[in-house]
Length: 288
Image (cartoon, rainbow, N blue to C red; front, side):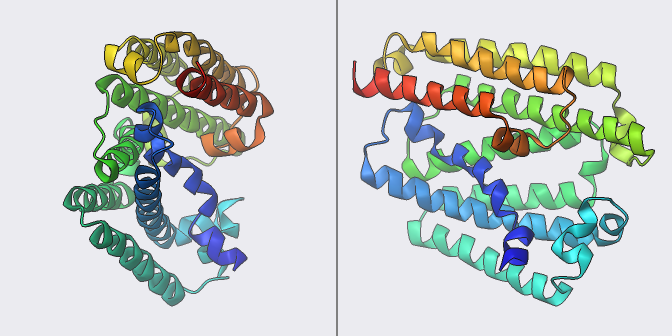
């Protein structure tokens, strides 16, 4: 069971919480029907994302065997056989599309299929193309938000879409920066890193972080958002700025090379900031 959970990367499912953003930002968290639909969307997306992780691991078995950490992955280590991985993959695809049929949402099905095909292209070719690789990662987060909108029927602010894209892009480039540092230490690199260096990643992260902050501020100043949540939501920008500064500090000052998901899991500062941001939204929406 432990190896199965590692194979489907269940710890990565935290990323799929982005599916709940439409009901969160619309102030509809107390609408049980929308919450249930969002949960089904979360499951459908989690299953399809896990199927992509299996395909990635299957394709990279030989290279993963030579990696100091990735060699311990279930497929690379031989703890799960190739045939077993294929069976699990087929079940994940079945579960994901069964949810689409249950919800009778063609829009959800289209987003799921588009995400799957995009990541197939990423796994076999595009992950080796600098800039395109991180753009696809960022688009993956956008698909999560679109799935949340598809299963709830809620409109999504253009500023929320841009914010999601820029934040995901910052994290994607931050991950590449960490890989560059590891490559400099170990001497082992890969083709996509040829299109990056530390100066480029540092500049890109600074510029895109600024764009993300501006998008969040514009989002909070949107009349519809102010009406749905509260006119003072702009003050929650404080937590967004602090969170981004903390991530940049971890990246530039402390050279944290873990994936963004691991950073969130491990860093108490970011966890507290995120919780305070969520609480502030709740207070503005439901208490004031």
